[in-house]
Image (cartoon, rainbow, N blue to C red; front, side, top):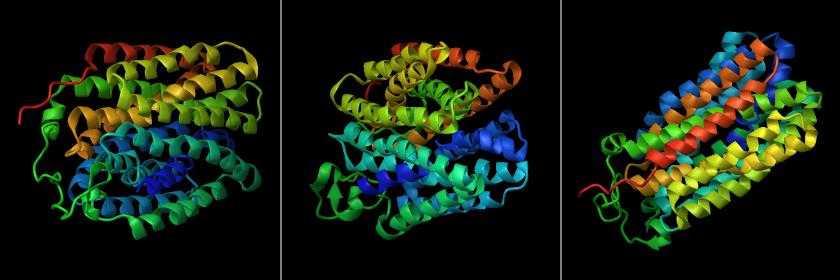
Length: 408
């Protein structure tokens, strides 16, 4: 299951989502669309992703991972391959903005984090980090590969190639290997590889009842801590998506080649692997509230490096430092939610956190486009990112402590 989640992260996030910034300039030049119009597709994608997140989480807790993930992989494959035929803005919005969003959510971080949250307890943060590592490595691998496809064949064939890769490397393994709800009980085990002779019915823990640390979804949604953490993660995602979507275009505007811009993004992706593993390990071994604060603070510290005119060295330094903090969210956020609220309803609860995060992320993409179209540069956009990360630090310090366990 860990291997499946790892490959999923490489292809789905590295190729299908986080490399989209590389398409920004080619799409604008080929189709005559403004960067705001192109960014709106990402905004639509994130809004659809956000709206469907609580639903996907609930479906994972009820009908199971196999059905949800097969449906998601099929939808995303169709959407990416369909991009080859795009000839209008509405078609672009529909395929990438709507269909791809619902597909990606079905095989996205909610599904893989749910599997890890259910299979592991003692090493939960670390295993979240291991599977999240694939997102960073995937972007580092796929960004230059996608850039190569763009340079050699154009953006249409590049999208088609990603779609074919997803069908072969993601859809097929899910069909062959994922069972039921993706829980250890499906295979006769309990969490942390402990044997469990008779698998219990779905939707119950190995003991047949909710554990003391498990919260019902409505209880979690009534917690100030839940909304504090979700808001902080969302604010950070707003800044992160601004960097991911507009960073490569800004680097090219500064006079660097498309290949160089992609390599800067790859630097951040590689160092994000340090954050994914490091913050995952800290989630198991340190105070999680302070670990969240550290994650946001690292990104804020990197901000001046992208604002100053320090040349390529400063951009690589920004990517190196920012990548560490940015990468931590993929492992730390689900680990904290699982530790604070338990595994019984993890998918449903984490689905709401994801919804909040992607709504803010959607706003980040549009804000970046508006700032550029209004001012002709991204200077104020990068300053806004720094302020957002500092705001996230403050929210976690005020509201991010572990809530009191529910009464059984």
